[in-house]
Length: 259
Image (cartoon, rainbow, N blue to C red):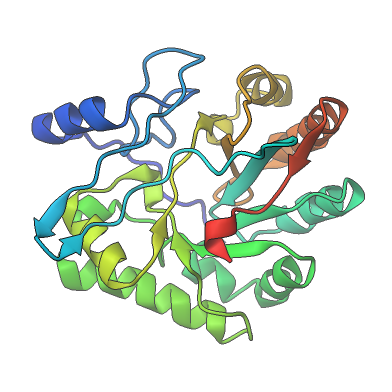
């Protein structure tokens, strides 16, 4: 299992202006780097983006930056990208110990060598989303290539007895009108994030924990990675994050739109 690509790509000027206008910002800076979300301040909360229409009858999928909030308690959504990998079972053990649920956005090419781990994710009560076949920047692909990235991953997931995913996360958080249109056609929720821990850059477990607990709010979607490289820091951080969220009275749940 090789390390997934960590390339940098610029958002077009028009795309950047649109995102600044309708998204606001997400916490933690860019991821891997991230392209779908624009960051300004450490404590910013992502605004709900407006709907863009291709026709009077068709509304494009709206990227989700913040999950549903709870009225009687506080809820947070932990998400893990780029797996499954050899680190995933360790994260699953921690989630089980804290009776927490998460959402795993898996890479199709990784599933082929970690089929049992994928099944365990589901059997442990977590949800699985589509994170493409081999982690390309989708905004650089043709429509047929984008569809292939998602369809191949859907096939790898369902081949293990899991239901077809109902949500997807574009690699690097990179999306444009084409990617949104395809998500709409596939009837998928496009999940981005509220807090980017930037754990992929290996800043140290304490930094990952601080970025999470220092910015978490009711409904926050937290981005971490269980694959794509050395994830020992993420495993260590997950333990402290779960403890910290538990002590603060948070419910740690899977994203309901991915059910």
